[in-house]
Length: 346
Ligand code: DOR
Ligand code: ZN
Image (tube, rainbow, N blue to C red; front, side):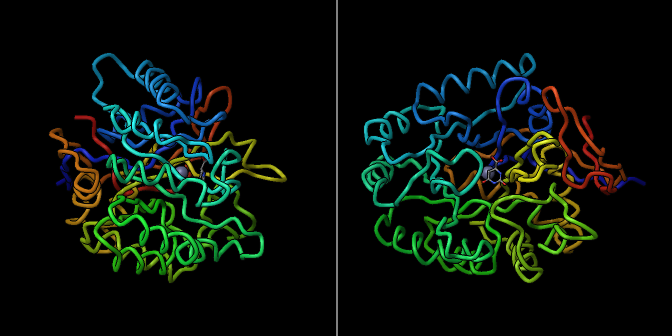
């Protein structure tokens, strides 16, 4: 007898869809699994205006099949120059759901990000007033801080004062990676939530060096210690309402990762839900998956739950070694390994 798991259709609250032919290669992986996705704005150039976000949204919709039920939730990329007027326009736009803070230089295409938190105070005030959530890439960029400590330093130096100053601003601490972040969110105000990726739930940093350097496991924030991974699993499966699913699926061409200076990002959309199911099952908490994947995030964003359903079945499949990506290929998370849950398209 096959074991099946029917869930309310989930949402991906952190997704990189890229653009053009690359987007066309990956979008179905997300659309088959998720009803909605928060779309990251770190294109080159970044999506800094409502107009650019709406144009990007049109390109996304044009990539979908006729009548396909997948809603891209657009975001703005904050810069030192984002005006309160742009924030109010974004908040008034039904297709824009948040604005993203990338500290300048923190990750892929973040050159135009925020150089000091003070430079976005007026934008943050406008967001608080208009009810537009703030999404944060929570790492300091201070070269004196060890790369493995940058998330913890961000909590102390940036996030704690920010939450004190903007008490009504809803903040999503994206792709958390440490025990410190789990503790901080759990004990934080109701205005603070966090997304957790499949790759940070599956791997500690040793996996990046397992038998050699594994560039396809390099992402930012970088994978942390095994104790951190375990804390993330406990947070994801623990039923706490302010932890939810965000894949941070971030495809790069294989050649850009297998390079002397490989870029950060892990592609997971091809099997994200199945891998989360595997993680929850290993933790003995499959019954918590629906709340994490299809409940908590929508509540935090003030959205209705999705009405459709998605079905997984307990059936092994081997994750492909590579997948097409524009005119090249991408090496997906779990490449060559066996995942025990499969998506049924019934
Ligand atoms: O690993 C990452 N890749 N982290 C990010 O924050 C950005 C992302 C990307 O866009 O490739
Ligand atoms: Zn991301």
